[in-house]
Amino acid sequence: MHINDLKAFAGLDPDLRRALLAQVRDLWTHGSTALEGNTLTLGETKFVIEEGLTVSGKPLKDHQEVMGHARAIWDGNGRMARLLASVPILRSGHLPLVIDVKDRKRYIDSIAEYQLAAGPLRPPGGVWPRPELEAPFRDFCRDAYAATRALVAQAQVQQAQRMR
Image (cartoon, rainbow, N blue to C red; front, side, top):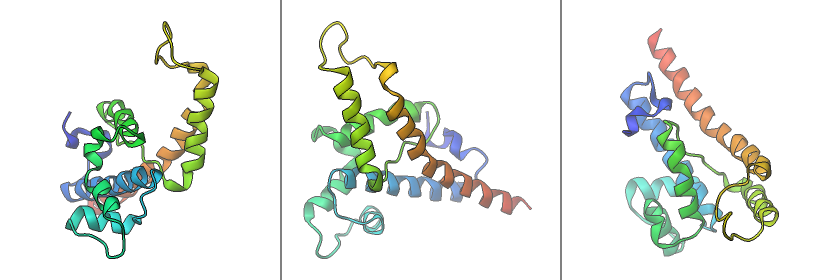
């Protein structure tokens, strides 16, 4: 699937598609790195991505995390898990789930609650999900996706205004 085939982009002019993609990219990168302790603000994250420059007074590791966000394979932490979790969402034609740092505690709590209830991974269960335990995390994801839906709705309103 090509990025322009995402359902969120349906009917949008190319400039609105680019703007929506940039907004989601910035929010996704900021949210994911901030959950891991990155100190860059959303605006600083956008600046680092778009300009490739550093922000005075901020740790070099924060800049490197932002620039390497799509290459999270090597750090093997939560960013990689969030990246992999977005693959089915993207393949289904939707924008990725963006987790705002203000929801960090609820995010971690819902994952920890599942892990404690599911117990240690062992055969034959392995890593297979336990649907009966997923409700709190599913609720979290639904609530977190509201911000992405709002961005899409805003782009659709702008498109509709152009059509008048």
